[in-house]
Image 1 (cartoon, rainbow, N blue to C red):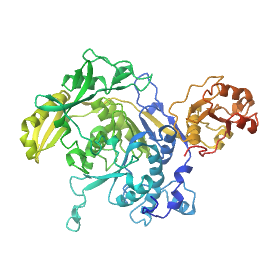
Image 2 (cartoon, rainbow, N blue to C red):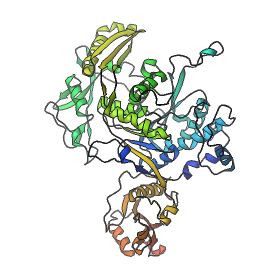
Image 3 (cartoon, rainbow, N blue to C red):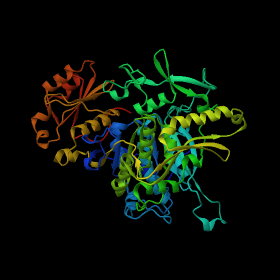
Image 4 (cartoon, rainbow, N blue to C red):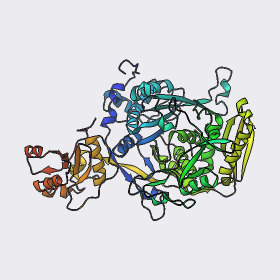
Length: 605
């Protein structure tokens, strides 16, 4: 790794560790701007749309989502000089302060330092995004020619050169934009989606790809169609598992420790169309060889236009949902995001987009959940002021349904016609007909055509009043005040117990704390533990209480903590004061951390 070439750029030394000094902030729920079922309360456990600086928002997500996001897709400014983005990160250095004098001015084409500013903007964000990604997760970044080569170099440095997966190419424009120059230079109608992972080289489980050397056998037959069987059940995730995932199909209900892999409508449709088979009273899912393909569905780095759509398609889609006065010129097409997420997520994946724009990523997540009964979760971050009126409004309308009149089409199958396929024409026809049977109920008609040497099956639905909503919900958030020492000393906008608990647990251990235990009035402040430590937070968001003797760590309180410490782990205790000597605390295996607590990690990596 040390011999790997790296990219040096003006300002790199100042932003190299800037992500570590970015303050933690609390995510503040805005109930009025959230979209939740009637009678329900917005929750940080729900889908999230966060309005605020995306660097600070990413830092705010770390205490809960570090190492837990399965798929990240970002679409940052391409740095064309026409996008109006500004560099305004608060990096304390003479160089950065000089740049920040111009922070109100967009980075334009004639700015000789625009590439350096773009790299300085991206570096700390990419560092935190990597920390948020699971070990087997997929990271995607959309980019153009302006910064493609530079971002590859800094991604090699941040992720590791061996973590590069592929550069996908898609046709972003149906027609060239620079028609007047068409005789002067080649016409650029494509863009790129660069993919990295944190996985060991070649281990791309998140993509659903078969590992090298693995083969699939299809020992069963239905007519002339070979197929294999795989379980359609999975283990419960815990005692709080939703009972809705244990419904009855054909007289069968999963046992208490298992559940179906999809929602009721989806599993019922699989059963009705012959994809579920019972053997010895246990349900299995049929995987047909002709639907998986003899090549085991390889992924190609060139995305066919029929699968990706173009930027023009993206704008048309947004116009249909919000009208044409939304103000965005370039919008990623829904089909591109659905294609990426279809192979890079499972039905339970967490998907993050920190340059959310119009919210296409959220719509793709909701569409996939609607199709397969999944429970994928999206987290969007949008810095611009249109985060609520545009981003959230699009997602809201997609959830509830929106006015529309016309024909909606969805491609269901695209199969290249070669000599081998033509020799098995009967199986190919049977495959097309089975897809029509499986998906036909969602459309007014299913059209089967041959286009450019490919069999294409398309579903078409006529909409006269309103597009049916995809369902779902989201919680809208803003960023709270910085969690710094002054807030606790002055009592000004103090963090809630839960927010501070997640913060101190992450900064102390490097681990996330998804759930904070409910605190009792006479409790000991226990919030969580690792294999080596139990962590306690003795705190109330009340200035008067923090200044009183009640907030101090006492001998009686320590005894209470020790009684519950059955595994004899070391104790990390956060409190405003202590009435015991450090020598005595050390003898008892207690490490005292005084509040206010400076932002640094005292344990972990």
